[in-house]
Length: 83
Image (cartoon, rainbow, N blue to C red; front, side, top):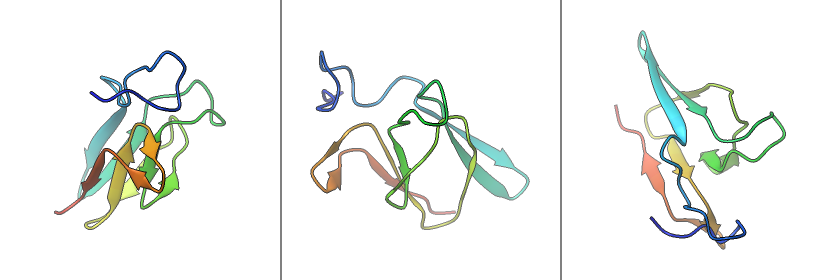
């Protein structure tokens, strides 16, 4: 894993349990697990928008999700959903 440039002590950019992907019926959800409260950064993004910890978000085919720290305007850990 690459060091997180936004964290003192250079913690890993992506945690072992960073987010949860859930399948409910025909829908897929992403639930960020990093952060203690809704105002904490989750270091998870969906389509470039920061997500709140503990909240489930619907993922559609073509959604882009990113985890961990970002470098400038580019995210280092990006996945595109295709189902």
